[in-house]
Length: 98
Picture 1 (cartoon, rainbow, N blue to C red):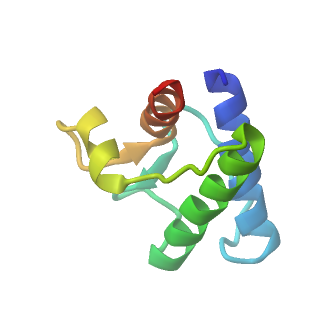
Picture 2 (spheres, rainbow, N blue to C red; picture 1 turned 30 degrees about the vertical axis):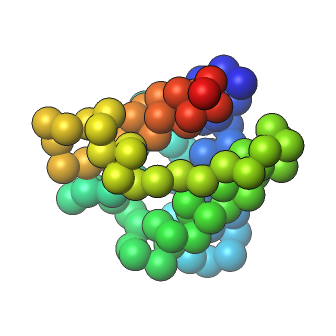
């Protein structure tokens, strides 16, 4: 799975949050969209829902059980206190390659 497809799955998950009124505005993601951190539009509940949605969508698409582990993702971004779409996408690509 390439980065573009992974980001489309992330976008679809954000759209799902908006459609269910968990986030008020439709978000069009980009590499620098903040998922965790000061500029994130997600509260704790919408963040957990986003990750759950991503795991479900990725598992369905790959036919494997996928678990996103926040402690592992932090390894990709040790110098900042934010998690961006780009960092998450890179983590997912690495996870799927192993």
